[in-house]
Image (cartoon, rainbow, N blue to C red; front, side, top):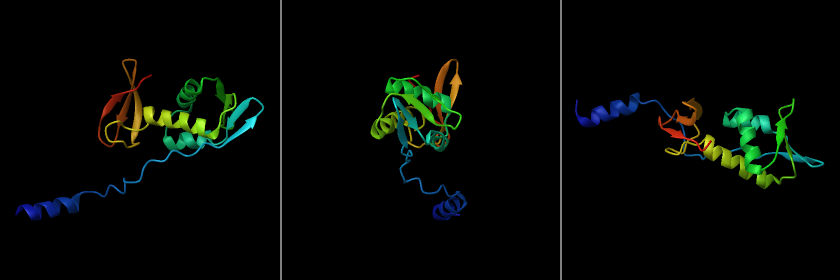
Amino acid sequence: MDYDEMLDRGMDETPEIGDRSGRFEVPDPTLRQEGNVTVFENYQSVIDDIDRDEEHAMKSLQNELGTSGHIDESGRARLTGEFSQRRMADALDAYVEEFVICPECNLPDTHLEREQGALLLQCEACGARSSTNS
């Protein structure tokens, strides 16, 4: 078997990975004001889409926005203060950049692991392990 035949055979046996050229999109937050509280209506669905722990993400959003808040029984985030859709989206993007996107391959196929007290981002796509800032 010559090189070209082996290459063709190898390509035929390689599983399809799918189109990864599309950029990972974080859903836009849907917000409404209730007095001095900003209600992040689709918080639970956004957290499900990025596949992270809701409490961890909430703490990060509170730190990023410099406020307090909680998750209500309906899965909505309630944050003290008035925040624009753009400001909330920026805080969410910062979270995704730090705790979801792999710094090596830029794919969102990651999960968080705690090792010896440090929080690490483990990438399923490329195998990279990187530390986070928290």
